[in-house]
Image 1 (cartoon, one colour):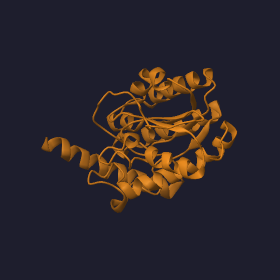
Image 2: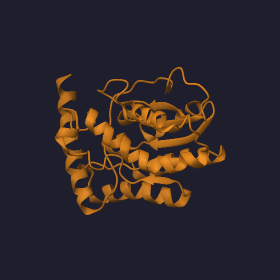
Image 3: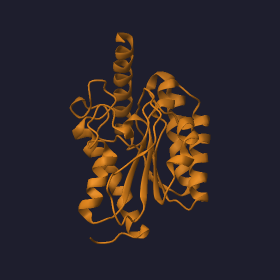
Image 4: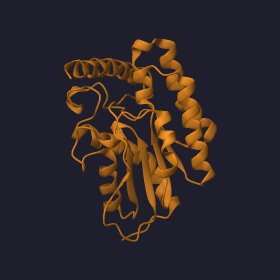
Length: 238
């Protein structure tokens, strides 16, 4: 158990350094997540007269690993939607440890029901494991294609690779998200953890996963891209 904790801490430090460098150079891409637990997406309970679902397909950053159930960034966005009078049901389809391939495998059942918007925040574990950027791009492209076939608008959130894979890997990894956003003409959050990654006061002890304050900043960042889509998707006042 101790070696796992140590490896996560080292990974966190590497990601923090990479993200600080990326933020300095340009407001680009983001970090990571580990551990696996297959489960059905979690939808907010007891919701009525919904305009449809907003599904968040991601890894532990989305699942809210280490946080209370109501403190993950999707849960915070559900509260924001309610406060602003948007009657949407948030579905947290975050699975800790998931890669882009894992997200693709469970995409169809994650999109069950009346899904109006899909937020894709995958790839952090691909970077941690040093998986080929071309495979990341292929998997994400398949997710975007399937969403488009269903007529579901997408928000794509970028990630950042750890620097120990080398500068060329980091460049290709980052470029995969920007290329996909352009090719598929989807809404794009270049770096999900912009302003959070690498800051000890906004992250848990592993240096990877946002704490409650960090999760709120992530929610705010996603909201700025998501909110303009809601009016087009049919927002109503309470």
